[in-house]
Amino acid sequence: MFTENRKRFVKLLPKDSVAIFYSNDKMPRNGDQYFPFRQQSDFFYFTGIDQEESILIIAPDIKNKKLKEALFIVKTNDEIAIWEGHSYTKEKAKKISGIENIYWINDFDLILKEVISATNNIYLYRNEYPKFSPEVQDRNQRLGEKLKNEFPLHNYNRSAPLLTKLRLIKSDEEIALLQKAIDITNKAFRRVLNTTKPGKFEFEIQAEIDHEFTINRANGHGYAPIIASGGNACVLHYIENDKECKDGDLLLFDFGAEYANYSADMSRTIPVNGKFTSRQKDCYDAVLNVLKQAIKLYIPGNTINIINKKVNVMLEKEMIKLGLFTAEDVRNQDQDAPLFKKYFMHGTAHFLGLDVHDVGDKEEMFKPGMVLTCEPGIYLPDENIGIRIENNILITKSDPIDLMENIPIEIEEIESIMANK
Image (cartoon, rainbow, N blue to C red; front, top):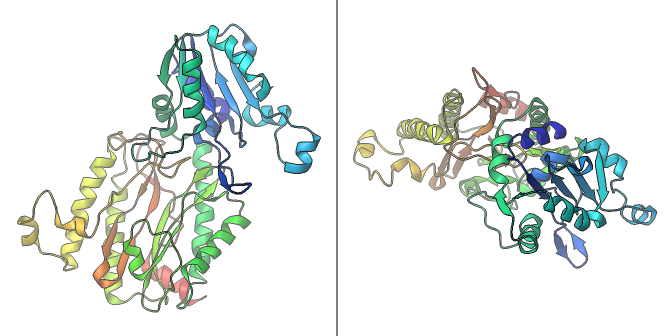
């Protein structure tokens, strides 16, 4: 898989180019501790190497065959193995990545000069996700700026657009990894259906999810999990997960296992006591009806913006049925502040893959092999009701495939499982 990813990338590079990718940093936590390491997604996409202080060079037109693809890793020895355990040998790095030429990181500066002098165009990576602007610079940004200072006469280019084009279309192997992450998420959800009851705290329920993820060899969560009971469900990014789950309340889940760095993304809403009230059922059915209709729209040629517009109309109709406003109210509404936005304020879809909010923009036309979320919702803080239902959808040449079709979603199935715990 990693070899094929690199081959496809090389086809997008102009002549006399080199692309340089840096692994993620070890992120300091406090004292002498680090946060658990998670590899930079594009570096993993090309190498499968899950280790810090690594560098990849891709220079297809260089005459020295040993430098057309070169991977640099931290030199290991017996003492490092005793203290820190896992560290790649050259042989293991070669086997995982499919890259023939593995070097120790100490050799990078010297080899880099040879590669740079034989190329004209340098491709560097930056995280170009439009809604994400961290103050902390990552290694690609930091060391990329260093390269510009050292070699100012070269042409510098962006790797991100090329990576976006590649990563949008998932290979069969990638879809299998996503499905594995989804299957683990399914197991975790079924576990909480069997353990949730009034009086439990949100963090206790998260612990059940964490346990299931761990015993199924997930990396952990693909993003901070949302375990939101009662009115907490109306806070879109609620992650405190520290309140008591009370009898009569709903419990909104938004979590997904990460497996081999590929992330699932699921939302479900259940009754804490195992039984929906009549009003809760009506609201839940409204969201579920929209989900089922919306999934049919996940076909080649559509876009996220098209999905959003059509889902907004669907939800508006459901909200009228729920008595949140009338058809006349809609006709008289301020078009710049439509009434439905009070009860549904987020989008319906985003791309999914190595990142939970994966590469791709809202105007990208759907093509076979793309995977996206579908997540309509209704939020009624005055009624202590927040409902979101989210599945992961694979675009094909014909009908979409719901990768989460085996995860309980119907009211009857949810209530039945919870009744038999």
